[in-house]
Length: 93
Image (cartoon, rainbow, N blue to C red; front, side, top):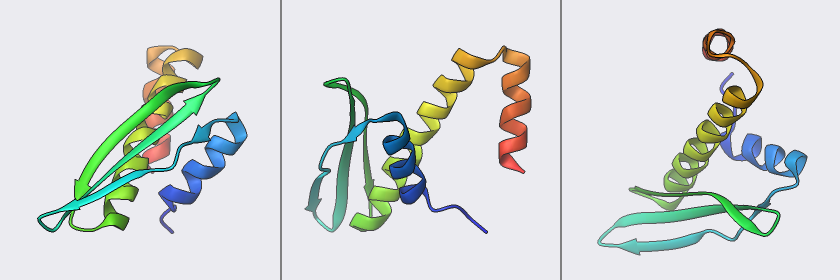
């Protein structure tokens, strides 16, 4: 069963006490653009802008990319390179 990236990221932000700012949305020439920013301790820690054919897809893409960056950063801080590759392999199964 595939995970819901939106719910998963919201849960992560709550756990880490991050604040997800209200997304900036725009549609020009039928292309939706969405920018999502995550704030920690009053500083924008993560931000990503994506474009897609509709707003929902742009939102999912932005959240997936931010979550990937957060996971990579956590892996780098908590484990050695060898352990991180094992962790990534287990996450993709």
